[in-house]
Length: 301
Image 1 (spheres, rainbow, N blue to C red):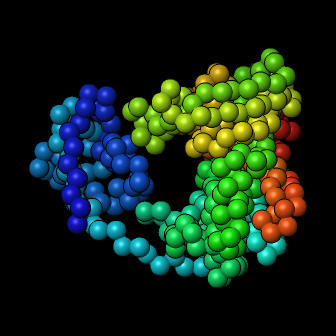
Image 2 (image 1 turned 90 degrees about the vertical axis):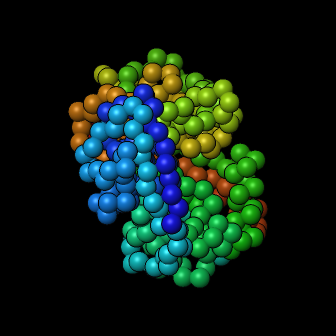
């Protein structure tokens, strides 16, 4: 068992205990924290609390975390939309709501579970048993193209292309507000948010991040855009667009605006992915069609 103990600061006053712990320890999912609370493993000032408990400044929160045991990740017969495949790599069109790889409290229904069923032992092992084949990822509610590597040599090659920023990555998104200029570039470093541990933010001490965008269509209150990544930081497009006053429609993390549409997270789709084939050096480019919800939304707008 690992023990954790921390004191509540003023900025966390009146937050639910489960949300508070998830903000402080971003490796734990909210559902896993709620499970610990139900099992009476969490105390505040030495007393067991319920999940609805709202913390107060100077509260002392303590809990025990069972030692991590690397679980067996099982293959699952989940359909995959394969855009491209050869002996080295496969490009999949990830649906909305699918997590890329297993993490604490979330070991089933991921892209990795599906990949293990469809490709069995044909996946690179560099990122360990929890992330076979995974060389980069996109957010759970972001749809579209993702490269998966079938062997370690291909994995190293694609990782180097990503590091050198030579992989072409074009995303389509709908953002709040009408963008006046036809094109633009956001060059702002991105790092961890100072208080929201699961969020990223424009941070002068963060990593270099560049996003190029262009307007595809303007609507009354929204703009349909294409964003091309020069770098690939966590939540880059979401943070960058929010930083210029145009957060993505449906993004509940980086925008406090209420969407009038029934959406599951941000309207962001990894549409075009271009890279050099690891063995032949041939340029490969895939184009993932917009998902049905995205097309429907454009029709409504």
